[in-house]
Image (cartoon, rainbow, N blue to C red; front, side, top):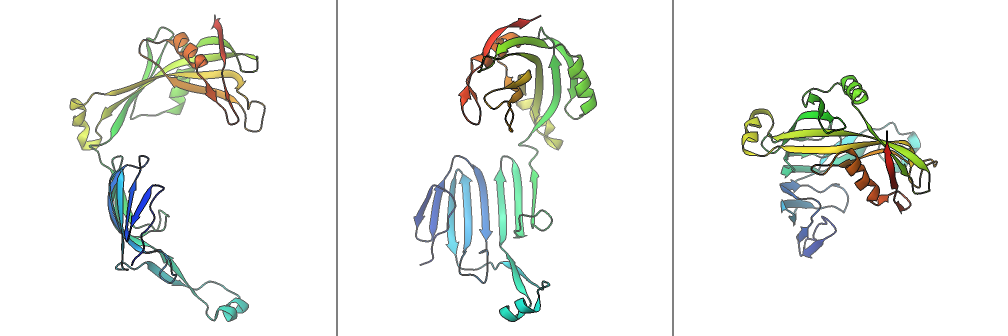
Length: 274
């Protein structure tokens, strides 16, 4: 009986069939794939059918042969004499079918090399599944609009100049080891609307997405890894809650438990700095 193929960590085998369920990789696919090495006694031809979180693998006879080419390397005479030949087979699997993952469609039509210059596949994001970035904004100390750039235009010099001109709030805090430092904060906001390209009209029927965050820059390294080769945290950001301004959001950040490579830690809010 033909043996089953492996797919993931939650496989169940039933003769030539493999059934797998995974929450980490939801997608849709129908892919016929050859064995990987034609001349070796390993690898099998499979048909994969993925329906969101469930995947069925069916082991098949070798109805699809791997891609291969004869390569003539520059071997020395001793190697040629030992092997009895001056060539070797370069073998890659072939696969045919399609897969859809998070709005990205991939069509497979041949050789699999994991090299974009030789892989035989084609893919694109489906415009009726994607969000388009329409603006990035900065806000002042009172949460009032300060600056905006359209999502389709990005100028790093313009952005850094706006960041430099935008007012910042300052707060003193005590790091986990008792060191007193200063945090400088700014409010940033991004907006996305549904549909790209010729499907932009879909945004008329779906609510826009807006994300407001507090950008935090510390006056020095923070956390247990400061001073080490890895270095401590010098800046971060958090999502802001509706109605929050600088101080409320930074206080909430200080109350949270933070993760370093070696341990968890907390910092203590002290006061606003004029």
